[in-house]
Amino acid sequence: MKDRTSTMRILAAALGAALLACAPARAADAPITPGAELSLDQAIQIALTHHPRHMEAASQSSAANEEVGVAHANLLPQVLSVTEYLGATHNAIGNTSYLTFAGLPRITGTNHGAPPGVAQGFVPDNNYLAGVSISQYLYDFGHTRGLIDERTAEFAAARANQRVTDLELAYAVSKAYFDLLAAGQDVNVYQKAVDQRQEHLHEAQVYARADLKPEMDVYLTKADLARAQLDLVQARNGSDDAKVALDNAMGLTDTAPAYHLRDQMGYEQITVTLKNLLDTASEQRPDLVMLRAEAQAAGAKIVQARSGYFPSAFATGAYSALGTGTPAINNYDLGIVLSWPLFNGFATEHQVAEARYQEKAIQHSIEDLEQKVILEVKSAYLNWLASLEAINRARDTLDAARVALSLAEGRYRNGLGNIVELDDAQRQFTDASASYVESLYGFEVAKAAVNYSTGEAPGTSWR
Image (cartoon, rainbow, N blue to C red; front, side):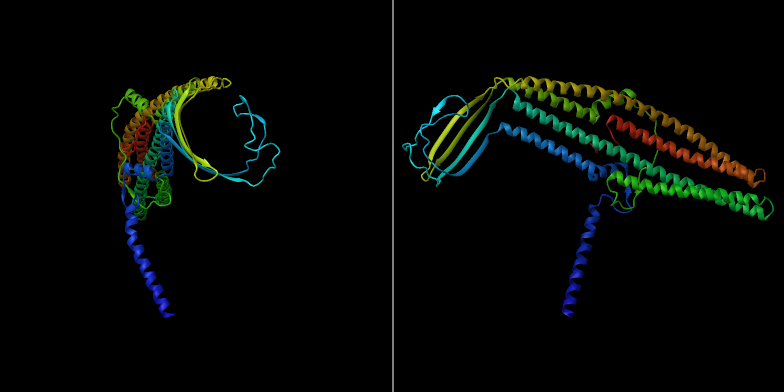
């Protein structure tokens, strides 16, 4: 029993050592190390690597690429091997007449070497067959080439659809990143408000004990402090929620460690013109690229349908060995097959018309999307301009509120003002600080919306 216990301890120790040895490797493979700084570009790259939606779109794109290979395979020789064993009787059928499979001439049967009336047997004879056949595409008036063009365009559409998904993920990560930044700055705003109100409460208590201020100032300040503390609790909860939302946007909801953000919210003058943005969107919007690729695929489908009016040709060759025993009988064939559908119930006409209508429908979809893109770009650009103006107004308001608070604090200490005036100035300063944070957030989100509407994202490595 002691030996068994010792053995188990040794195994447990070895397993623990192995786990410890593997832990650094797993940490190194993690997209975010605990306590690390996280930039916006890094967050976007994590989403474009680990998010299930990205991997789903990438798999669909890869599948479409394989379809291109399947279409190209039709240009290469097709080799087929056959091996067959058949047990069958060989009873005479007399002079029976029957039709061929093509339904053309009536062919008279034979006795197969036996006179009529011979008793029939029910024991099958052995029949063997082995062979190889080869066929090679020669020409079919665009059907095979049209299929290759269609699959190639569909692959381009799938790639564009993958970029649509990546663009949506990049925008979602950008917005969540700035949400968390803004939430963190809101926490700082309300923490500062709590600290200031605690100072005001201390002053009110000192003045009240010295009979320089009424006791009511203490209770009013306590009430304002409690409200500020409640605002701080809500701000911290909002920051926690924003952290969860960013983790989810990156595709790391269950595995994201604690980290802090590297970037800060800011603003700059807007120098790009609306025309530049519209030109960029027309060229880069992946949903437009996807529809244009689908239009190319529809055009290739028309070529395929029209090939039904013309013949198709391919070369064929085969070798077979067959018989009821050994040695087998060798047979060879080699030739060119020409197939030309003369009448198929007007199916080709309907197929061509259907393909043309599908192409027209996609063209109309492109026109509709182009109008939507113009609307989105213009709206995002106007919001971006307005957000910059909002920052200027919010900054002016904050500067004025800061001066007003400083004056109110001085008036209260010098006995020239009352607690209501001080609390009102404090509340206006806190609101102005929060509004300024909100204006910076609005600028960053509006800029991200402009990037999204033009088919771009922060950084260039995401594409």
